[in-house]
Length: 99
Image (cartoon, rainbow, N blue to C red; front, side, top):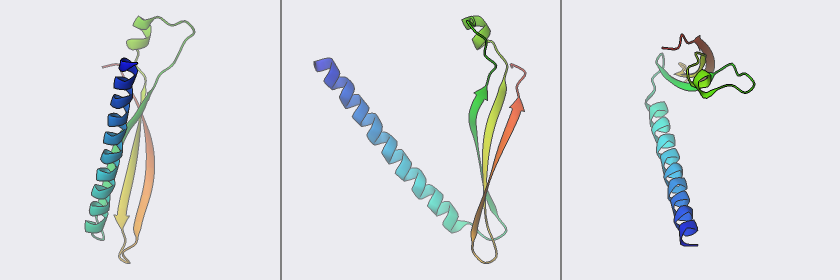
């Protein structure tokens, strides 16, 4: 029972840290948007995932040594002359050569 309580406590602490990070990130984005001038842009790019081909009963060596395609997501936020924020989203697939 003691081990279960320790694991539960760790989960609660991790969740609390996750919520605080989310609140901090939201405030930072709001500050960036407030400071954004007309004619300027905020560009956010994030690695979304790696797309890998899969095979039935594939060995670990084949799985981890694979080259694939990386999926990147980009978000561009601009402010127009009338002070309106505009956001556009882009996805980019990049072929990896395994290096």
